[in-house]
Length: 358
Ligand code: MRU
Image (tube, rainbow, N blue to C red; front, side, top):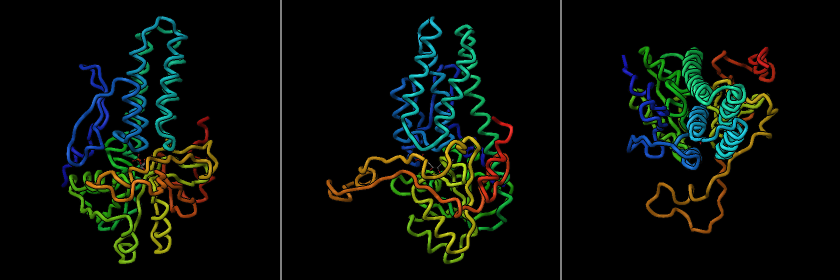
């Protein structure tokens, strides 16, 4: 049986009590180097999120929660109102670092809510409560990923071919991951899958992170360029597509890494099911549909220069570099959450997940 402890327990984000410091694995260095960096100032934190040193919707949320704790510790004032004001400003700065993944604002809101609830406590009690909230968000994500993995595993069978896009594994979340969760869990149980990992232009999360995580876990993974998804589907090598999500609207429209909607359109053509896997913290019931999801646009240099020894286009060529696209709900077979598998009509099945929560 495969030993996945190194992969599934990857401590991509950790608060070190002895050093009183927050560390993340710098994902931009992978797969060539596994190195931790320390995040101390709000500027370093914003930069880490913006430049994808930490990335993947759930991981961004977990990281932001610990960031808020570290920043709270740095606030030196005895005046509670001034403390809350400063913490809220830090929250705004972090929140502005990336717009699409809803987990970021969700985690920051949870931390600010905890601070507000402890406004009459001592500084130490306040800090303890904030640490506990961040750790709870982290623990919850581990549990949610485990549940998502179980539900996802029920959708495939031994020997299946699975295509995935971008990276929704342990590095993007905690422990098993979401879209890679069923694959890693099944592998742990002795199942064999044949996984096709889209390289995911322009930032190559599929090549650098997904194929790295799967290969280390002993999964049969084949790296393909994004424009090869169609041929592997046509060849009959893919029985399911598993993708993550950055924000799911109330009607099921789903923002995920740019190129996901193309995968879903191809899959529909070839009659292959498309499963979106993510925690309920990625579902934004206040967002009615995909048209309301803010889509991050990134620096054209990522297309023209990054990863290449020489520029791959003329310096002044016009580029369009959206980081995400929206997959229409009618291309999605099911949305797999920690609370169960939602099927169309998503307006009803997603709403049912949150019944009694508000
Ligand atoms: O720009 P990224 O690398 O943060 O984009 C990540 C994705 O699109 C993932 O598929 C998504 O966040 C799900 S991670 C479990």
